[in-house]
Length: 206
Length: 327
Image 1 (cartoon, rainbow over the protein chains, first blue to last red):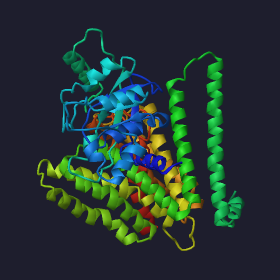
Image 2 (tube, each protein chain N blue to C red):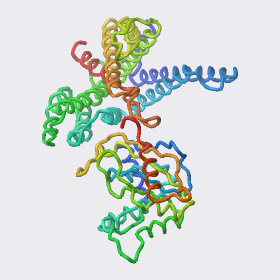
Image 3 (cartoon, each protein chain N blue to C red):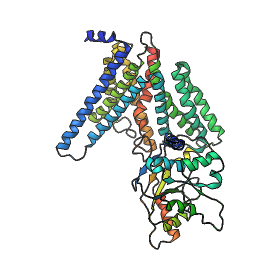
Image 4 (tube, helix red, strand yellow):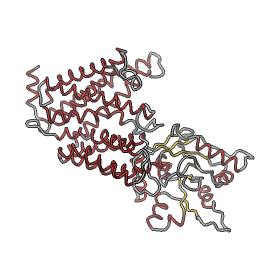
């Protein structure tokens, strides 16, 4: 086992110790097929939680998106995102000659699965923000990839904005039924449908 | 029979404990075999699914196996291992409790204190046999520290309620449970190294009281004491549970340092407080709107630990202090 593997195991263990990181597969079983998981985004821990909730075999081929300027700043951050999580880097500054989705498309062409947070930023509380259009473009470009909605519950209580030490509170990740882009469906209605698929997974009473 | 008991008393501690575990695991194996036969017979008779009674028995038996194995691991790994094991249980139980207690952002530092400072310190005190400080650490010092941290966070909304909930959770999940390893480490004159017997005694009488009370309330159908909280908990069933615990305690007196009468009284006190603890936890669960502790949508995983240890959390401190002061 390499150091990166050991680090991954350790992080998954910590995530389970602190949050339980229970995955509830309500709409589909965990399966080794190419997928895009899209979820609500409330905390920095969201990615680690989804990752820890996945079965071990799927973790290596499921990749997060990381902002290049932040996550390559130090050697440790670069090592963590490249070696442990196999992250796909995107630039936050938009240049005219480059499609910002190109790195994601590249990863999908290689056959990897992705986890994306289509709100684009962390929503502090309550309802998720409207989805950004990236999910729609990827769905149109890669119709063979399964789109799986997911709801991450309770995680904002574990580590509120500005705190560094997480508090142990049980969290769940609920995976819903796969979605696909219907023929002739336009961008706003697809994005709204995807967003309501995520919201529908919220446990009652939460 | 008395000759046999005298013979047993002349054995070494290790031999006695070995016999204890032999009896415990033997009984469990027999029960598991009986249940398996019953299920096989039901399957042969054409029942496709297990009935609710069998499923319940299966679940209880599985919990008993886990409990017995944990107990054995705790014994084998010595005082350090047992204390660590209980600390982990405290951590998991408090995690379940806090999940359902609505805390606010301002409680973050207090919760960090509870999980990462109070739990290790409390169990360190136990492991070092600092029993005087151990009994006052949570009720006095933590009780004062938690609201100070909360006030420093600057959020006055529902201040007393939030702090009371956190303090109560620490009292039950950490303070209460930490008395179980304390029993292991409590030394009596002429009773050194036999702490495991006391823990075994406590667990057995609490379980007997609880199970008898449940069965009795099912058969008797008396008027419930508090219908809103538990539709079956009646005074008669509670008394029967205590009586059963006392009988079990008197029957087990030979593993304690005291005579049968005192053993019966100790068992009645422990069994009664365990049953009442379960009753109180039920009120809390009703308030939170759940049937079992753990996550709202929790089906699998470690959820539900607090359900198992709650009676022990209430019985252990009462038992510990009654043993320490009065007997």
